[in-house]
Image (cartoon, rainbow, N blue to C red; front, side):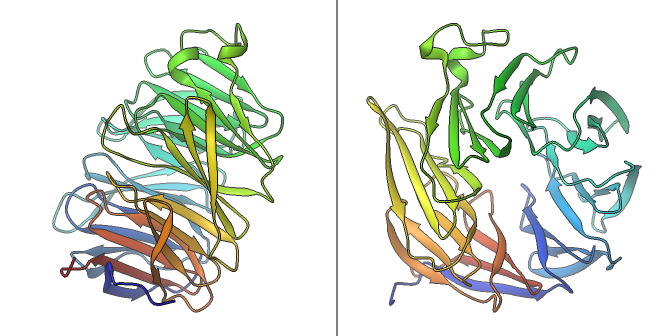
Length: 355
């Protein structure tokens, strides 16, 4: 396959083990990466800096706060570590003992509140004040946790339910979405109007939150029921919404990674239209849209990252992970794409200056 160069390799680093998670800071060119051996490393303007040496216990969740002030990491040892990263030399500011594996964490989009799993609870932690906001009890082993884009709601997938809280009232869930099987991933659309859920029975549900958020717990008529897309060939590993410029002419577009395929869904007046992207030869583990464009990156265990123009046509194939890739992330500006490999490779590509 001969394709034009859109992204060019600009940095390469090697961690000691499988790259489990990567995250870009919203400020500057700072990338964090974690591994299966427990190390955490920064690439700041493509210069490497170690934050945590290998411990033998994996780091599985990693994220920067909305202002780039904080980096949070959680993992197998049951510890949540917070670095203050808006200084010349990042420093550990807090270490929270959670008592069990921390594998889900997500920052509020407009303030430094961090939601993460802690035993049989989900805790909301105020990093700036170094204190808990609340603990949501009875939530053991959540499959996913996601803030809505405006930060007004928090969705948590637990067992065969999606529970949605109002962030101004933590006394009880605002809404409960009952599923046919447990969920594996959830994703809000960029405008917060839709909530997608990957379900273990090889289906995807899409809840029209703009219609049902006024309800207490249950739909009142068929128009409030979630849409179900069925017939996927296997487990749905990841979901991603297209982050397009706001326009009444641009419908919502959803990408789903399943087996060696990427299935695409676009909302239409008649429902949802679909198509398949099928150039990968092994399991697709991750998909991500470039911010504010229709370009899609798909990452697979076959050692390919495919860049799809308008989520339709393959435009470039990226390689560099001998045993396959594990995770990817676009820089918030869309100028850089980072990916981790299963043998510790950490690669960054930048937009070609010839474009």
